[in-house]
Image 1 (tube, rainbow, N blue to C red):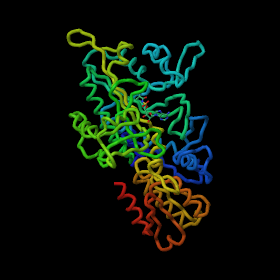
Image 2: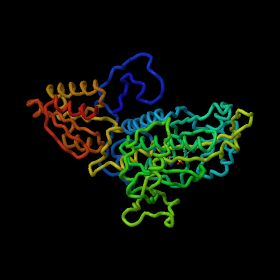
Image 3: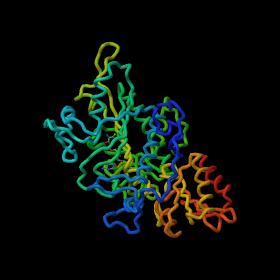
Length: 468
Ligand code: 5CA
C-alpha cells in the first residue's frame, strides 16, 4: 500500500532521505468536498470499457482529441503507477532524471530522425524561428547528455530514466488514454561498452518489467516485437491480453501460468537464466509472428488480442554513432557506446488495468494502484452516532497509513453504493444507523462482492491485516 505524507521519502522511489520526519496535518477526504463528478450515462464517444469507466468515474476529461486532463481520482491512480515504476527502477539500479518535453530540431537532424519521424512529430518554432519539437521519445536528448558528460570506459555502465509527457500526433487517437496524442511514458536508457554488457542491461530491465507489472496486478507477457522507429534488432513488447487490444498476439499457453516472482532476483548477478526461461517459450506480436517458426499448435497456442504496456529495445550504436557518443578505452582508443531504451506506457496503464479488472458495476482496482484503499460510506451523515463512528474509523485507518475516501454526502444509499461500485475502491466500509446501535458496520470487498456485518474492531483489523 502506498502512504502519502507519512514521512517516508521511499514511497516515491527517489533516493533521497527526509531531513526531518515532519508529518503534515491530514485533512479528511470528504466526498462532499471532493472534486468528483460521476456520470450515469455512458458517453457516446467512448468505444471501450476502460474509456467509458474513466469518464463515468470522473477520472479524466478530454481537452482535445487524444489529450486529457487528469482529475483528482484519476491523477491519484497515475501517481500510484508512477510510484511503483520509480520503486522498481530504483531496485534495478536505474537513476531518475527529468528531461524537458521540448527539444531542439537540430539534435534530431544529427541522428537523422527529424525527417524520418514524419507527421507524428509535433513541430514547433520559437520566437527566434528556431525549429523545435515536442518530444515523442528521448534517445537523442539522453545521448547528447551522455556525450557531453561521460569520458572514460570507467564511466559505464549507466542507466537513466524519466517519467515525462510525450506527444505523438497519432493519426487516429482513440480509446481514451490508451492511444493518446499526449501521454505519460517512463522511458529509460542504458549505456554500455559492448554488446555483452548492453545485453546485461537489457536483461535487468526485462526482469524489472516483469516485476513492475506483476505489482500492478497485471499479467504482462514479454513477446518478440518489431522495433519500429526506435530501431535495433533485439526488442520485446510487454503485452496484457484484452479483447480490445490493438495488436494480435500469439503465445505459448504456459507463459500465462508463469510467476514473475518465482525467482529470487539479484540485479547484480546473472539474469540470463530468467531471460531464457521467459523467452524460450514462443510469444510474438503480429509483426513478428512466423507460423513456420512457431512450433506451438492447437489449444497450446493462445491467439488473442493484446495491449502493449511496455516495450524494450537494444539498438547498439544507432544513436551513439551519428551523435558521436564515445568513451576512451585504456589504450586511448575511442569506442562508441552501445545503447538500449526501455518504455512503459504509464498513462496507458491506467486504461489497461481497468480493461483487465472491472465488472458490470464499474472498476475493480487492484490494491496496489487504487486511488484510495477504503470507501467509508456514512449512510446517515449528520446523525451524531454515525458521524462519530465514521470519524473514528477514518482516524484509525489513516493513522495506520490506509487511504480513505469518506462518503459523507447527503445522498440515498443506492446512489452512494452505485458510485462506490463505479469508482471501484478495494474496500467498502458502511456505517449505518441500524448497525451502529448494535456496534456493527458492513464490510464489502469490491472484488468478489462478499459482504459481512462485523463489529467495528473486527472490520478494522480485517482491513489492516489484509494490508500487512
Ligand atoms: N523510446 C522508446 C522506449 S523508451 C519508445 O518510445 N518506445 S515505444 O514507442 O514503444 O513507447 C513505449 C510505450 O509507451 C509503449 O509500450 C506504450 O505502452 C506507450 N505508448 C506508445 N504510444 C502511446 C500512445 N499514443 N498513447 C499512450 N501510450 C502510448
